[in-house]
Image 1: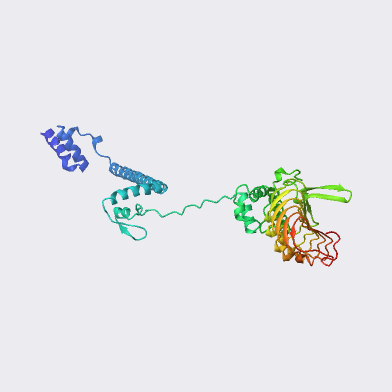
Image 2: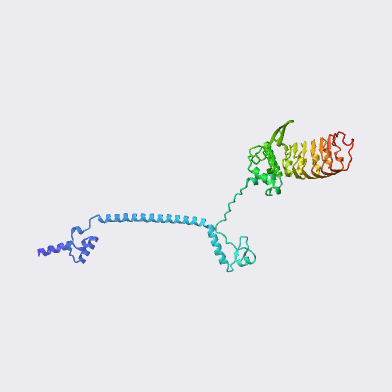
Length: 411
């Protein structure tokens, strides 16, 4: 009896209601597995404080997982932004190509008679524009129009020389634009010459020197310089214009052939006698305003007197004996008021002596023989210093007596 009573007390003492929740679950599990309550060991019971530690570990794991998720989301967002930037750059660079594609799509869509609006505000269908002679419409571009980069205009030195010569009215445009003309060839030479083209910073004297060098070059090509008997250093790049000539010793003294210069290095003399000059005198010679002596004896120079020779106001000697000059003596010869000797013998000059010859009051020698002149000699009445006058082989009508020109020694 005592044993059964003790066993009943023990069973009552360890009842299921006396265990904690976790213990209850454990007991139930044990009971479901047909395990008696006596098989529960003390080690199977929960330890005090172990539940709290498990909750803390679970909380830490949740925080770590949340941080990982935030990091992943951040990386994904940054990756999307980077992809978006790259796509934008590609779209911008391929804008022209996209415009072309859009235009094709637009044209295809509008071919069904859809109404379109042009940049000028006009509207209509593609068929209407084609029927009216208009060009195919272009859709509005989603990208702003970009101004085309201007292409720099490259100019040659020859073009710069020609523009300068034309702007200074030294040569005519039609002469410079004619390939192979004396002016065209002179421009090419000056473009490669050691003397630079004048500009706004060039001294006045240097501008004059450049101009006279260009004129001398035009004269060379106009007279067939490459066929001259002696070129006298003409067009030698490393020489000044004043060095385009040679000096000879004669019994009477030094004699300069080619180009001679004044003390101020201006062209003052041109002497090219018997040197196979062929061609006509260029108008550019008028820019040699300091010239005093011009002699082209026994050559094949033809044509008329260029009007610009009227600027030779300091001329003293003009000798064109035995050439092929034609036309009349111009009226502006009155500007040669300083001339002392003029020889036009053996040419093809014609007409009457102009009134301008009355102004040649300093002339001492005049040779007009062997030409086609006619008329009177009244316009020579003021040439009181004439000592030698040659008139034969012409058609002059006037008689010359001792009262006509009192100082004549030879007629």
